[in-house]
Length: 157
Length: 158
Image (cartoon, rainbow over all chains, first blue to last red; front, side, top):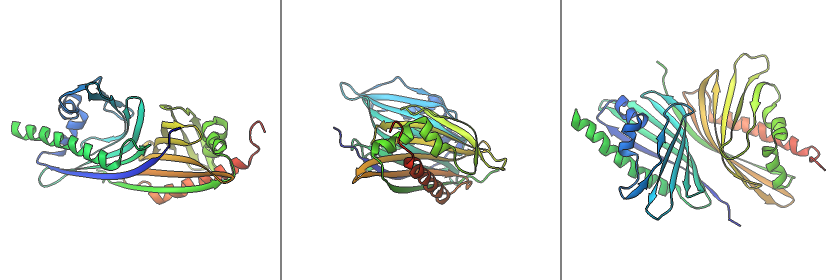
């Protein structure tokens, strides 16, 4: 029998971007924009992916190393305030095993320099498959990809 | 323009019930039992509620304090269910159609002595100052009092 356990954790990631909130928001709201940065490592298998960005809409992102476990991200959008806020919940599965359930809030705040972005993620990590610190590290990696994507927007301007 | 804000908070409620983990779990799983203690709260008029206890199931309803025109609604989704051991769900609460909170709730059931310990952990994002974590914690304590009464009923089939 599996020994059941739940670890609860919260982490916050903040960023400052020299573009207005609407442009940062679009990186999350627009499927084509999000596909530019919300991806696994280059050598991973990827898909099927989908994004239905509306309250009650879902997002799926599937990927994993060749020959390795399939990572599945399943998200439900709970609250959307255009250019200001996105609240969503998501599951992470490794093959068929659910390893965590999370509640995430993205706040897009107008600042003198452009946008102050704050992600607050609260999670329930199940049966020891993943840990809050690992998730934070993985999410930092995604934000580095977002940084690079936002940098291409400013280069175009 | 509305001033937007988000308050994040986590609270834990623990209860010991003189009932087996299976009996306590059944009070969440069985729609009739769940309806008695969770949905039909004293002082509330329930306009509608649907139960859908399965992984991926979505349930919720609409309700008003007796004599008050304000309509509250909840929309929940079950994410993880381990019979007699664990339920993980998320839910949003709205007042007159305006979302006021989104929460992640974990319930753990543990056999302890002659009964069961229930550990409820709620992680929440409270939006635009409409609701407060302390109010929610109080509401959950009332619900777990109602669950104690439910568990004092004759077990079904006994």
